[in-house]
Image (cartoon, rainbow, N blue to C red; front, side, top):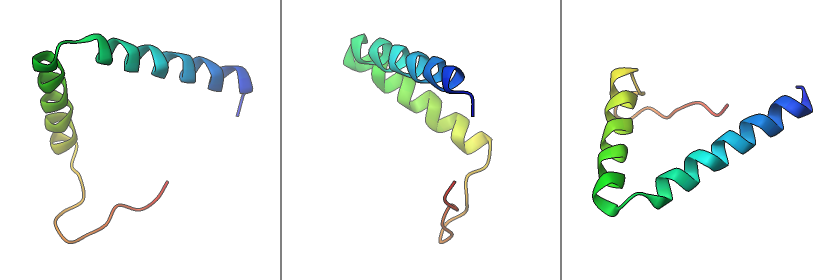
Length: 54
């Protein structure tokens, strides 16, 4: 993996976390609900099955 690319990804991730944490609690709840809906739409493992480690 390209070290520079990894740092760019890490920096972007930290920016997203900072932006999330600056939201008021009601907006955070909306973001969490949206992400959960995306996860369901993309098909998570069914009940009783475990996700494989990456």
